[in-house]
Length: 538
Image (cartoon, rainbow, N blue to C red; front, side, top):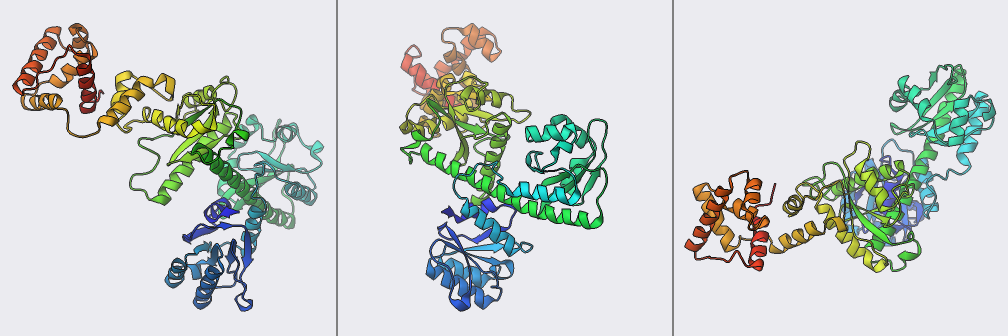
C-alpha cells in the first residue's frame, strides 16, 4: 500500500496534483467510477472519475466515495477546480486529486497500475523485456540496429543486429552507456541541445570514428526523457519516420513508468531508513550494512540554518528537501555509491555510512569526507557522528550529526562564535575532531540569549559610553592568561595597552560593586563563556 502523496509524487511529470489533502490513507487499488451502477470504490481505492465532468456528478462522486472509505478521488480540472467540489471534499475528509488537462486517462491508469503492481522494492535499472521488444520492432521498421537511451545517455535497451554497428555503438552496448569521448563529439555538434529543445528527429552525419545516426527524441509533456538511436546514413521515408515518432511516444510511457518505479523505490528506502534513525525499527540491523556506522548530516550550497527558504510553507519545505536529496543522490551515484542510504529528518538530508573503510570504498565515512571535500564544483558539507554499533544508538547519532553540522553552517544557531574560537573548518567534520567546539556550543546554548552576567554587562556599558574595548581585552586576556604580550598580538595593540585596559576593567567592576577574582579558575571559565555569548569571535 502506498500513501497518496507518494503515489502522485512517484508519477511525476505533473500528471496528478493533490488539490485537497485528505487523511493520506494508503492506496492499494484503482477503481473506475460508475455512478449509475453504484461503483464508487472501497477502502484503499483511488477512485478515477473518468467521465465525471458535471458539477452534480462530481459532488455525488466525492460524497459517495468518502462514505465508502476510498482514499481519494481523481477528477479533471473542469470539475476539481469548482469551489463546491473542493469544499465537499474537505467536509467529507477525502483527498481530491486533479488530472492535468493534457493527460490521457488511459496513460495515467497504465502508469498508476504499474506503480501499484510494483510497489515492492524493484531494482531501479530493471527495464524488463518491454523496451527490448520495442527496440527490436524499431530496428525491423528501419532495417538497422537501434538503441534506446535515457536523458543521461545510459543504454536501457538495444535491438538485435548490433554486430552491424560501428565500434562506438559496440562500446556503448558493452558499457551500457555512451562513452565520454563520443558524448563530447555529439555535444560539440549540438545534438543534445537539439534533443533538449525539440521533438523532431535529427540525422547526425558520421565521421571517421563515429558512424551516422538518426536520433529521435523521447518526450512527455514537454520534458525530454531520452532518445532512440538508429544506425543509418539517411532519413527513412516519411511513413517510417512517422511510425518511429509514434514509437517514441510508447518509449516515453515506459520511461515514465521506470522513473516512477525508481522514485518509489527511493521513497521506500528513505522511509525505511528514517524509521530506523528515529528509533522505530528495532530490526534494522538485519538489513543495514555491517557496522559500525556513522550518521552524517549533509549540507548543500547556500545552507545556513537549514535548506528551507525563509517564510516557506510546508510545500516549499518539501520541495527544498526533495531538491537537496536529489542533489546528494546524484553526487553519491556519480562517485560510485549506487544505492546510497539517504533520507531526510526535520528538513535535513541524513546519510548512514560505514564508520570503517578506505576512501576508495563507496559508502564509508572516509569516502563521504573525500566527496564533500572534492565534489566537482558543488559546495557541499558533511558532518558525522561518532561511530555506533547498535541500532538503539542511531537516533542519538542522528541528533549528534546535526549538531556537528551546525558548526559548519555559516550563521548557524549559536555556533558561529564557538566555531571561530576553536577554528573548526569544513567542508567535512567528524565528532572527534569537533569536541571542543561542540562543548562550547552546548554551553553557549545552555546560557541562552538572556541578559548578560552582571560583570559582562557592566563592561559592555562602559565600552558603549567611553568607546573603549574592555570586553574584547578581557576575552583576549582570558584566552592567554598571564601573557599580556600574546593577548596584545591578538588585539593588535601594545602590551602596555593591554595592562592599562585591564586596570580599567578592575576599576569599572569595583565601581559597580562587582569585584571578581581573576585568579579563580571557575570564575575565569564562567566569564569566558559569558563573553563568548556576548561577543562571538569573528
